[in-house]
Amino acid sequence: MSILFFLVATIPEDQEAIDISSLISPPPNLVESTEFVPPIELAEVDCIDIPWKDFLGERIGARALNSCQTAFSDNGVSLIESFLDNLPIMMFFCVPLLAVFMKGLYIFKKRKYVEHLMFLFHTHSFVFALAILTVLIVRVTEPFPEFEDNIGLLLTGIWLYAAIYIYVALGRVYHQGMLMTSIKMLMLFPVYTICLALTFLSGLFLTFITI
Image (tube, rainbow, N blue to C red; front, side, top):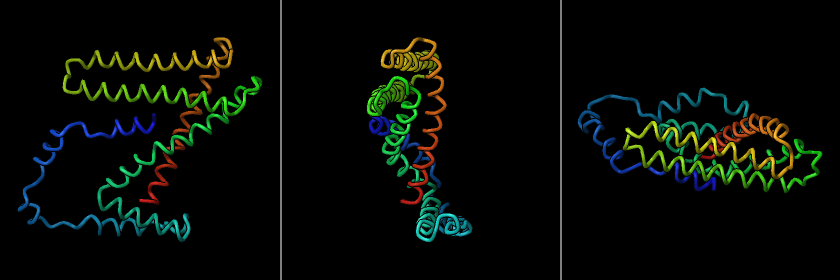
């Protein structure tokens, strides 16, 4: 489901946007008459100044230097594309880490690690399904700015429903009252945020040294 979400989110909006961007490109004769330094030369100067090998080692540092030059040479296009390709896979590493935290959070429930893992996969699938729905709603209604306020209320309702769904799911699966479920859900949010941040940073780093 996460892979499907990133596929939907990265689909170009329409052909018209591409045509418009091509119309604002400078005339060929203006480009030819303007003196400029090629991006690859700037990339080489900027990237070489960074001591990659000092803190990454000989082999990884060399790859980081090459990736830096590649990223600068195409204005980061290859870096962003590779990052989006790798991100769904990196998201799967976040779920097992959260399952470890859930194991400690519900230690007296004597649930197996796999049970926490299955619960998280289920809730993640639900959240990504709503994320796909959100992207589709935004894409479809974008040409109609008069409905912006109504769409905002609709999206707010969707994500309030997501929070309620997760809250109810925690209570029913782990058989705890409203107070304990509320406390543990509040504990889960910052941990999940930290896990996502680490996932994004590690995904960006791995992408950077492999493009």
